[in-house]
Length: 551
Image 1 (cartoon, rainbow, N blue to C red):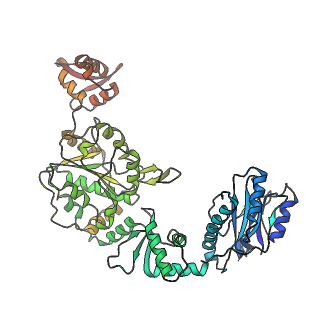
Image 2 (image 1 turned 30 degrees about the vertical axis):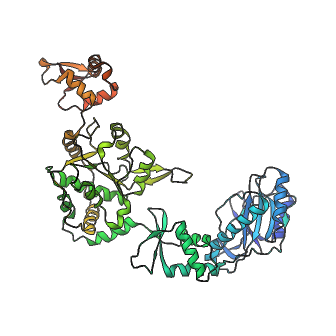
């Protein structure tokens, strides 16, 4: 058995050498000042014809590092205790001066380098449990692999047992292959890249239902393997199903690729679906087409700077199939991506939902407070990416936004943003939405994908935004500030019939008139005046003025 030592000289030239365990121990005791070596105990390497280091032989050695040991006495105790185990090859001080490195032998069983990481991983997990228990010290967890290494330290008294017995592993490389073969004979596995977990489907099941491989499923697979005569444990099953040996699967990409080929090239499935919504809005069909294209563009990752920032808002009394229409927008294979019970007031949950779901229905939109409409909701609707910390995660991560929004309400006046409510498309129904005709989902989304690839515009232009804002005025909530304004002023159309007043002057008159009943800030009131329909305004040296007539 020989270890591989890497060293770079002052010219950054890489030098590779191999040494026995005795030679490595001797070098540790030689001097405290020596060149920096990285030691790879598990693999003996050589250079190929191109000078690249390649493995020649697996030694069967894992590296355990016990950290947070600043006291010399405690480090010596850990070293001596580790050496009582027959599987310990060596124990010595770590290069940082506050740790102990223990080299543990394990059974290789095969020189198949494709299994090297799997074998090292399995042995590492067993060694961590065993040595933590015996030494009473904590292992500094690392990602186990065949190329685990340590920095050559100085230790005047390293401990070594060159004849260490390999760790008794019941599940060696051949057994691992048998476990994998059994699983793949009976199940299909795929790693759902959107949901972030592995799914499996029994080949014996008629329904071919895909289920998450959670703890319950891991236990079931383990029992099934053991009943088949294999010495498998849950961690052996978990290592496979959580590895990159399971193929990646993107459900959206899979569906859209099939749909793209299904469209006949001329049937307007999008328009047909839009026309099932009865209304007296001539632009609805075009607006719905653009919104749906934007939703699909977002799934395809085409939206870089802004997300789908427009929300169709279906308005009618109850019983007109609004919620059912929203749910039916997604095919059965993507129904996992539909959410209609999100509390938009919970900001963290909303951001997380935007990265995990495909369509969020803001059901009973009228219950969303005006402050949320004008603030948080208005902001998140336009995001192209979201930054969140996953459950049990340690860091904030950046995810592409997937979800688009749609909304329903039973009330007519629901829009609270005084700047014009450009983010919504209010559609008042004149009857029930027609659900009698089944939706050709592959045709619908195939049309959308093809139109996007042909370059059809999926975002709303300036003129369309102005039309939407003008259309939405009928659904706007008249704020208290506007109501107080109407109590005291009329909008003047002629200078001879009115006077030019600043926002502050109008604001102060309303406060004197209403007293404590008039609430709100001057800035907010300025936004109200700026967006008040028909109110003339002009700039002056003391700020913007508005043409009003006192009552």
